[in-house]
Structure formats: structure tokens, C-alpha cells
Image 1 (cartoon, helix red, strand yellow):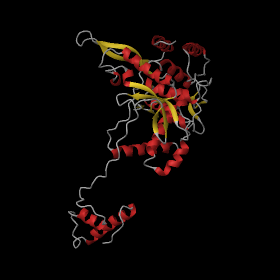
Image 2: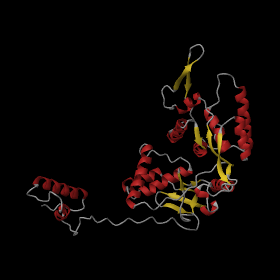
Image 3: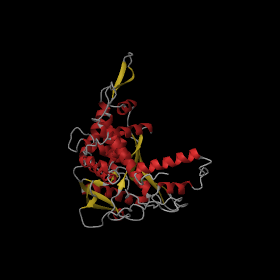
Image 4: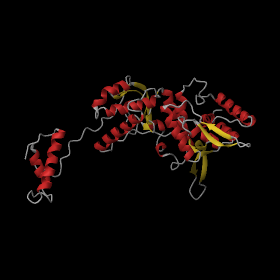
Amino acid sequence: MKTFAERKGALERLGWDYTVEREYRGKPGVDRREHDMELFSGITLPLTAKDWCRLCMSHESRPAVLEAGTDDEGKRLYESNENVGWDDDLKVVQRKVNEWFYDGGRTSITSLVEVGDVLRGHRGEDSEQNAFATRTPEQLAEAVNSYIEYRDKMPEGTYLPAWGKIALMYHLVRDHYTPEVPEAAHENYPEIEAAFHTVGSMSWALGVRELFGFSGDGDTQESATFTMMLARYVPGLRIIYQRISELVPEPVEGWALIDRNAGDGEVAENGSGLCVFSTKADCEHLIRMWEQTQDEHEDDVCTPRKLRDKPIRERIGIRAVRISAEKGIEFLDDGAEPKVRPPVKPERRPQWLKEPMESTSGLFEQWIDGKIWKDRDQYPGQYEAAFQAWEDAAAFFGERKPSGG
């Protein structure tokens, strides 16, 4: 079970609702009509109300059960939460599931694959207990047949695990959709905004990991992105450098997708961060999926914007990289290096500054010129309070020593 037609047929046998990508083909006003492509776009999760109770209830609930009505004899029924060994790294997965619930049980294939990929790597590819571990086409066909057989014969009162359904759906659609095409980070932000964005994002990331509690045991893309964030954070907050070194003791090496539109030295980024993966095969798999999408589309208007105009291999390249907190991105092959980010801009000269000077009192006089209470005799209290605040600020920041009146 490998082709789109086989996967589509399996979904129909299971009775699971899905949508595919469409585009209009033909000449306007002549024979232009909508055409279904061999790419999945969205899906309705085959979950019951009780499934949603088991999935969305926090594993930290005490007791970890939820009352779910009564039976024919009036006896209370309870549902326990169904989790996959939740820990802090997987809370983002449960938040995604809650989002699917809010959206009425529907989700995009992109979101489903993001969750499946996280769970696929969480317990390891070789774990027999991991329903998200990679399946061969033969194993997938067997899983579909077994699911249908058990579903049709299962005893009354039993249920199929909700995560098992999601895993089976993940395997059926993950090779036939359009992954997000990544781009390198933009350089058109003002220097001060870029600095605030970097520090703010990093502070949030460190905060949710309970003040530097990140283990560093995530997948390659997560570790690479986190390491690069640290590299950008160091210049602004040298005081935490020693702790950062403890967080990321070893560089991360892997294979990066390069955004050739930005330059052969620019690593692309997607919603998960830097596009750095553990093997070159992972990168090739994504490129082949984008090529598949390009082959399916015929109309330029309907083709996703980032896949128009040129073959994907002219847009996205693959290079071996090492990422460390000390040096950031280093390529392990010959070729272009990452662009040097804009240097720090010179300090902006205040509009009120007419003549540079060391004296804080002289600077204050220039700043106060034109203010409505510049007359000391008329507004002595306001003037003295403003001047004292000015002197205190200069002393606090150490730019200039107070010079008296």
C-alpha cells in the first residue's frame, strides 16, 4: 500500500472523511473546471465523543477519570485519560489535539503530520509499542485490514484506542500532501526590532522549559533551532553564557535545507525552526514530496506560491551543517557561508541635541529648551524635580557623572 490511490481506497474502506487539494484547469469561459489532485489536504478525525474525553483530559488530572453518563441500570460510567507517556516535551502535542477538538474534529494534513512526526521520534522507530513508528507498505496494508476486522467484530462495550486511529490515519496520508516550503530568516527588520524579537522569543522559550530545564534530547530540528537561538541570545545577555554552555555542551550536526532564493549559505526555516535534519534522506524525502506537488499541478494560479516559477531543486538545496552556541551555523562542505547580519547601527542622535557635551547640566538645558516650564522662577518645583531625575538617571546608567547644578 504505497500509491495515493491505494491510500485513498484504504480511507474509503475505513469510512474516514478526507479532502484533497484541487485546482482549476482549462481555459476560462471554455472548459475551465475544478480538478482533484493526488494530494491530501484535510481530514476529519474518526473519533467518538468518548475518544475526545480520553484525549483532551489532562494526564495531570486527579483522579484521571471523567464521568461519562450512566448505563441502563443507572450506574455511573467513567472514562480515563488516554496518553502516550506524556512529559513536558509532549504537552505541545496535547495542545494540538485540543485545537483539533475546538475546530470540530477536523485538521489539516500538515498539522496531523507534525503531531505524528513528534510521536514517531519520541519513543523511537524500533519500538513495538509506538503506533507512529514507520510502517512498510505491507505492514500498513495489514494494519488497515486488522483494524477493519477488529472494528467489525469487537465486543460491545470495548473501544479502539483513539491514538491508534490517529496513528493509522497519519501513516495513510503522510506521504501524499504538500509540506510547508521553508524560507530563510528575513533581514528587513530594523535592528532594534530584531533584537527585541530575538530576546523576547528566547526568553519565552527558556521560560516554558522551567528556567533552563531543556534536556537537549529532542529531535535534530528542535535541537538545532534551540542551539541557534542560544547563539543569537549570547551577545545580548553575556551573563548567562556559562549556563548556556551547560545546556548545549555539544554541537549539533546534520543536513540542512538551503533557501537558494536567499543565498546558498542561508538555512531555511519553517514553523518548527531551522530545517536541519539528522539524515540527508530526510531532506530528499521532503524535496520529492514538493516535486510530487509540482508534478500534480498544471495551473500556475492554483499552484502554491512557493512552488511556482521554478523546479523545487532550484529553490531548495541540501548541505551538511554543524550548529554550535559559539559559532552558530557552520557548513561542513565547500560553498557559500551564511550572510553577515547587519552590524549594530550607530547611536541615534537626539533631535534636541544641539551641541555634544559631557556636562549633564548642559545637556539638561538643551533638552529643557522650549518646554513650557523652562522658566525656573515661574516653575521652580517642576524644574528642580526634572533636573534631579535627569542627574539620577545619568548616575544610574553610568554614562556621565553628575556635575552638580
